[in-house]
Length: 624
Image (tube, rainbow, N blue to C red; front, side, top):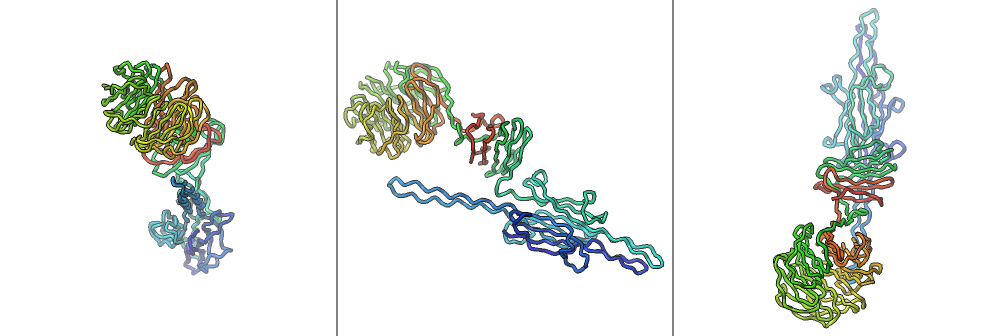
């Protein structure tokens, strides 16, 4: 790391004075010497050494024997290297993915340079002296340029001694005072956010060769830049205002509240680690919030019961979750336009509903009945028309635009429509069809049978291929692009496919699985059980955990982003689900932790902090 070059500058401690008798009193100049300091006990990452003393042999050079004070200005520690990027995953055609790019190297801390130059007599020093300038070597050329100077202090010459009184031999004039400079470490605080050096100067009025506190006439600071790695602050009191790019060690006897920085810039970060058992809370300012995605429990689903009640057989919703529809075996069919908070009973045609589906905007709806007809609505459920069929319809699905529909009949055929249900075409063969799902464009379809295989179509239902193994398939679900498919088995497992249904594998324990729903990307999946609970997966079905109270849950639906959910408990109420994504915005939101809990947040703009690392299993949120 480059350091400031050694500079030698005379700094006069006084001037010669003569009396009327011709006698002269010799005064010694104060010299400052700056040299590179290698890494060692004085400076862990190297730096500069500043020596000062009086030029007693008057040769204009500060000899080692003349050094009376030494201070060090140390470089910041170098930044750590970024980690290597991970290898890319294999492509779908079986070829290897390309290697991830190497992580970017962390930047080294910038060198602190010091320059000492003569200061003529003037406003800064009445008798002249030296200017001590310091700053960061931002262009890394090893020279402190004028544009890089961020701090200047002055070491001034003492005033000329008074002339001695006239006598037979003339007494000597009094020596002028030496100017001294003292450098000392400055802790992080109001003067230097990240610490640095304090530069004090003054006249050695008691002539003891040391700058005493009473002799200090000027104080300035050489402040360190933001460190390449974290600077930690130990907190022992009840509260603290956080600074950007700083870590906090909570080591108090009672709970501590740390308030996030008030005006962070994009990319700024903060860290907190719980040392004591008292616990800590990160408090927010107005307009701020903390994302909880990726944190333990950070995307928990909160379920709220909603009226009405029924023996529910089908639920669906628009992609944004605002428009919802629910059907019961008793013939009642309800719609909601406020995210499931309130429901309107629509005219019941007396059908025994077995399934419903919705377009992405929630305007086009389709409902099927067991032993009855297919019913269509083009006005969000206000009015309905029947196709006059009479079949044991067991399931139905819709493309995002509501144009392509697919319906299955138990012990019958698969039927498809490409004109919003105006006409229908029979597909495949008679089977015990139980459920069907569609990709957003209607191209990829998956249908489950009761006791046979799954069947998949990738050509809008024209042809079908048997997949997986013979099971009692109960429900199916598809991502928007049709790549990721899900199917549940009664008293079996949940099966997943990530190649449009070509291959399948079981990913869950055996349970009495019922309805399935997934986000548009297939990441967030919710599965219902009969006589158990609702389960969720946030990793494409790899792992599952319980997310609701026990009960008979037959059906469930999801918004495109997976954050809004609708589930039904058989013989009971509907339940709306809201997946947590951040703390409550503003001063009422917070995240709390305890001993050995650690969290790092980074500001990304718009009042939002993102968690970029954590060590915890017990973080708590005040969540929206």
